[in-house]
Image (cartoon, rainbow, N blue to C red; front, side, top):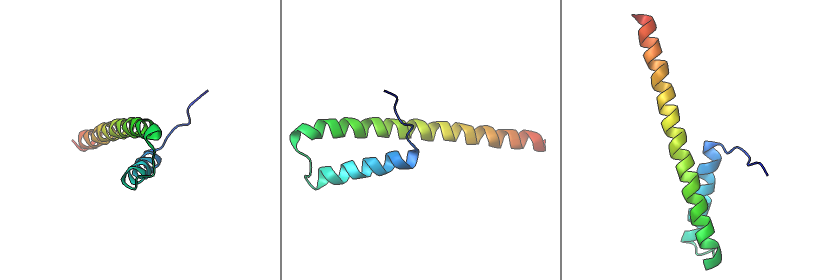
Length: 69
């Protein structure tokens, strides 16, 4: 089974939903570990995505400065 590619905005929305479920006590103890693990995975993905994007933007800026010189 292949995983669907997750977009950053979708990951953030899912994390927010999980947080809301936890805060409102919607989850039973059996779901809690699974949801926290999922949120952790999503946050790790978001952090990697932000880091990659930051690197790409810096490369573009560096190239623009190089082209101006």
